[in-house]
Image (cartoon, rainbow, N blue to C red; front, side, top):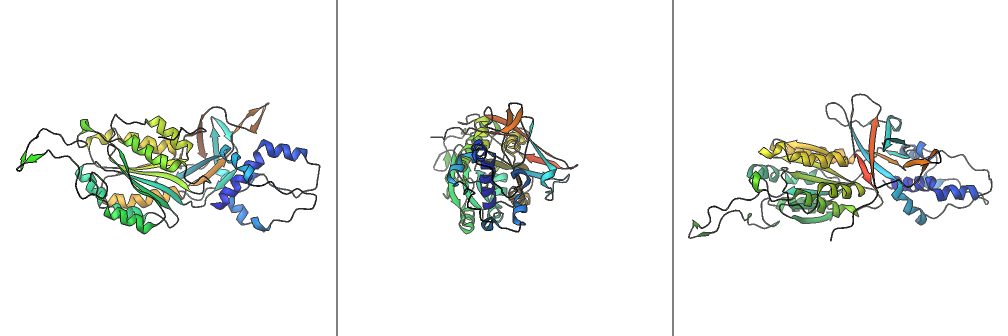
Length: 388
């Protein structure tokens, strides 16, 4: 992925107005022919006879390329779109070429400046529902260790539980053994992570006699949902928003929950979507359990997945989870990466320029019949202010 970061710098400078003005002000000099950035791919660079560190030395009259530091602000003008392509039976399609992709912003076709099929390491926040039914909780509890097994040696992961409030359990770590140990010691349903006691759901008693038999078990009845799924997604997105500013990792939230969500969240879906899209974060969800709200609330989780270019799954049986953990991380790690600089009309022609407005719709098409394309449906140029 260092190649991707390097190419993004080169593409950003080549398409920037500053670079165009600099080239026009220089006298005519014989130079080696160069291909345009949109005709190059990381694979093509690797197969070239010269490596990036072995390029031909410039003549005495040729100016040295500008330093990297002034180019960094232009990276923000590049839009990165991870894309998953599957066949009709849900298997990943990994043999597509750049020419088979078309990408549109607000209905206007864009030029793909960077195309990559290289696997990408992950920065992932695993978010687990800590207030599910007993059956769903046991289903997830038995599969926790498999989450660590689904991560690769270059991935980094953080862990968070949620019920009424999100509860961070483990900060980002690349130490898979430490992540495995934390998962192994985790007891879902505890009021506090790692505490041996269970949740406060039973009424108080005196001499083994219940004093308040009418106290309900909150979170276990549809009309008594007190857990805030939206707030948990927001907390995970805040952890990821400043992660990996060079875009060398795929940032994702891995949400494992039964789909219930209260009406008292501090953050709304639309607020979270702006944060997720402006921070290049995708959401992957696994819905567990067989409760009546499965027909309604998982749609909320599905919207997080589809709108951010992630994916949504449902685990009907306990052994489904172990298989799905690996499937989700494999899918996120092996997406196609398309990068473009937005083109807008300027004087009757299309030129690279700052996009107009804040939200912009994205559509990715693949010119191969019988495939299903997953990509985020838009992006925000402006991120919301950090939560306090």
